[in-house]
Image (cartoon, rainbow over all chains, first blue to last red; front, side, top):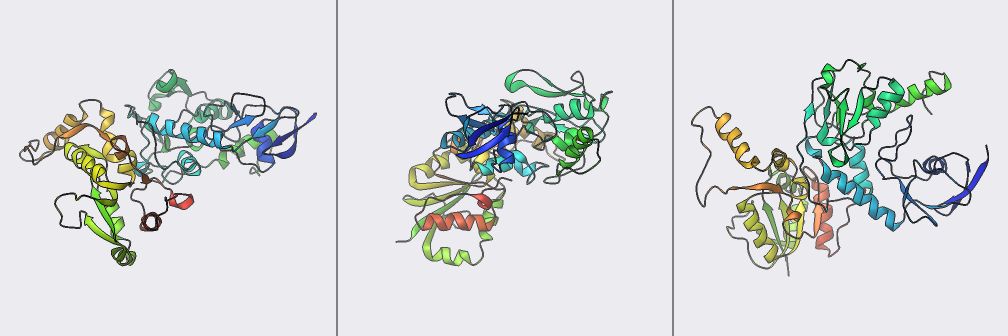
Length: 240
Length: 181
């Protein structure tokens, strides 16, 4: 495949045609903050945290779904990008009820870690305090919509790794909701195979193993990468 | 001149103040640098004038909280939202999810439905402050200069922030110094 030459943060880089900006930056050791991106499943550009500046393009583009092109000049960590990343995080916190102190994922949460990395010491927008429920009807797992950031990682692993298609998105905008089957109680689902990949994929404490209390829920991403590697390379080996 | 320091306890569990007391020997250093002019651990009834620095624990939950908060803002140079309740609303603000009549509902649940003997919502003009319709973080009500999240913020993080403020620097929360929950 043809190689493309471009610069990321002033560094001259050669990338394969068809690669995304995120893949290329990661391979070059340049870290771009991500939230909805998950190794092993395709990218959707839902969270916008990986936005980058490209010279000559007025819009900020998500690195995870933007393909590299010859001569691209990309900035990944400008003042403007840091400003927008913090803003996105604050809006995510204000949109639902993220109460770290009583969350199963406290201390192991990607949303929390991102907030720290962007220096978010408070949220400037009024919290909306919406009313969401918790689905604990499944015998093994629970879903707390209060903590959901709608990254759709759970939906993607369910459809494209497990192939069960149990998890879906319903609704529009801020009222969007992760649903099970046709918006049924998870415990009543006939399609759920109880594999737990959605729980492992979740960046926050929205999906959890029942019985975990504050700070106890740790998501193990390696299991997902393991399965993806097995599928793509036909080898049962740990992802490198 | 010594810095006039105040600490205030609004709608919170006092855990942040417990963490403050956990400062151990730094408290002795602090006592040399500041006059503690108002605090739950000091027997002063009214919030004084000309306060330099005030650490505010807790969310704004009732009319009493709101009244003293406005007084604090008017009489203090620098405010620090001290702990998750002050910074985010945290656990006290969870009642907001139950809509516009949440205050009435939580009182009903706590004092009527859960009561074993003599169910009654406590009342008393000038004694029991009425709950606000919505619990708010401090900065949604008054301007706040600095934020120290954490539930509670550890003594080392309190020390770091207070030490920076006492030396006249705008505190920076980075790396380990920044933590929610």
